[in-house]
Image 1: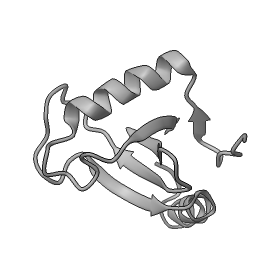
Image 2: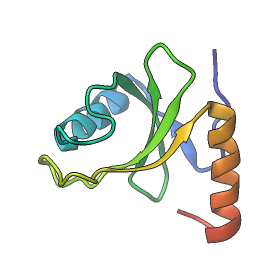
Image 3: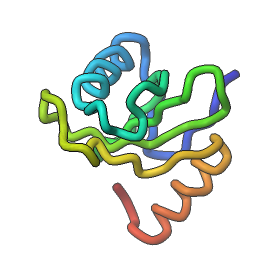
Image 4: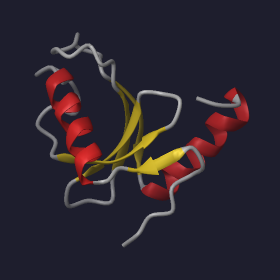
Length: 103
């Protein structure tokens, strides 16, 4: 299934997704709410450090704001900006842009 990403989001090709996945896994502390949840990076947002991950085997997605610290983060980082279905993500992104103008 091909997902139609909102403007400003780009699907991550294999190499780019692998790089983003490594950074995500590097930053995620053991006390993070997504620790132990199998996810795969599917997209990133132009102009921000946000990545869209899909919870493997489900219709759940999360937007995670990476810090690019290149090390394990504090308990609430990287921040989870959104979690829900893909349609809810598209609606969330539209509201975000309406309020903030851009990322």
